[in-house]
Image (cartoon, rainbow, N blue to C red; front, side):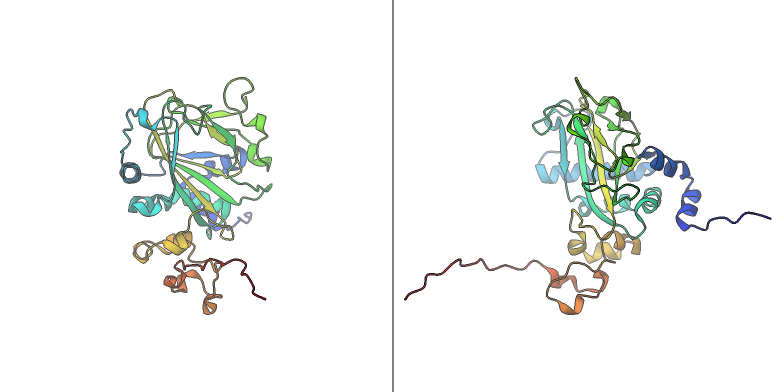
Length: 303
């Protein structure tokens, strides 16, 4: 007689992709690294797309070998629709399998931002380090609202200002206190450990795990994409559902459409016939921003 086995689709997928160890690390430590999340070609195209997009926005293309103009820590938001390479990256098979394990396969994409870590300090980070924090402002014990994924487009080393994690902090279900956020100098949190990973890796954690990054002493640039996947009832940081072009939806799979929020129904206006429709069944042109008449304010009354 053989014991019955659990027939769980998500566990079967983890086994097929040979990432059961990563799932165990997520449960035990609150973070994991998938080193071969992207193939070298997609990694290179992602890096090129990121640098091109930054050039378009700032008028200056970063030099990843050495660039004092991008010292400290920089963030660029709403990157997904800048290049088709980003569409492929958010659909990376092993990443999605672990995301599904944590927040379900009906999750949506909340944001895709590009981060650059350059040498030294900056105006926004006068200490040089990014303090320890959780990405979920309302963490719950034993329940994940969202999952954060850092896609490494360059090597992440201790010399490039690598990420810091506090193992097991996801089980605390709270944000760190001010004294627990410190990563350098007197009072630095001695529970924080460095995490390094080669280009093409995905660093994955339930969003309430405490993490930050150290100051970089290197003149080179570390380039990563920060991708947040969230449960579908949560308000996303970026408005994909309303703005993703039809052509982008058509060239991608139904799962990509789910990430874009096409399977959700919230987001109502006065189009009453849409109130029970998924966004995939709506005429999205009816949701273009409309002008709002300014209030004239209190009027004088003649007697």
